[in-house]
Length: 286
Image (cartoon, rainbow, N blue to C red; front, top):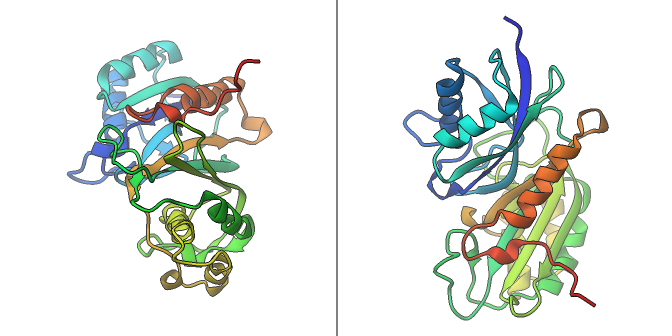
C-alpha cells in the first residue's frame, strides 16, 4: 500500500514528559503521539523529530515527520490527534511533505531559547519554565563572551557523556543574549541557532555564560573553555526547565510558507503560563 509523507509542528510542555524519545515504561512525547496516531489511523506509525528534547525541556515549534497509508485528510487527522493527545501537547500544523522528507535529515538549523530569571523573588507561575538565579546577571558581559562561540568550532567542551557523536564540530550561526526591558527586566534570554547540537550542548553553553554573567569567570574564559575541548573546563549544565525548542529552518526545496508561519506564530503566541513575555518585542506605537 503506497504511503504518504506528512509533517507537523508540535508544541508541548515538557514538565511531565521524559523527553521526546520513546522509552519503556516512560511517558514521552513520541510514545504519546504515536499512540494517538495508531488510534486514529489503526496503523502503527513511527515518527521522527528534528530535535530529541530531554526530560523537562519544552517545545514551541518541534518539527515531526512520518509516513502513513491513511487516506485521512491533513485537516481531519490534525483535529483527531488534538482530540486524543493530552493537554500538555498540541499539533499546531499538519501538512503533506515531499516523498522521502525526514525531520531529522532535512533540517538546516535548529533554534533554541533558554530563559533565565534573576529577579529578587521567584515567580511561582513560571518555575517550570525558567532557571531562577539569585544573583543579578550581567547580560552584556554574557553577550560579549558568547561571540567567540559563533562559527564552526569543536564543541567537545560543551557535550555531556551519554550520547557519543562521530564528530563534535558544529556551526553556530547565531547566539544572542539579551535582557528584556522594564517591566520585565528580571528575564534574560539566551537564543542559539546551529546546524546541530551535541548532548546537553545548549544547557552547558548557558551554564558557562551564566558563570560569566555572575562574575565568577572572566569574559576571556569562554574562549579558553572552547579551545580546551574538555567538558570539565566548562560551566555547569543548566537545568532543563528553562529550555525551549523554538523552530527549524528548512532548505529551499523543502521550505513551506505554512510551516514557517506556523512556527512564527508558535514563538509569538504560544507561551507557558506566567511567561507571556516570551513573545518577541513589538514596536511601541508612534
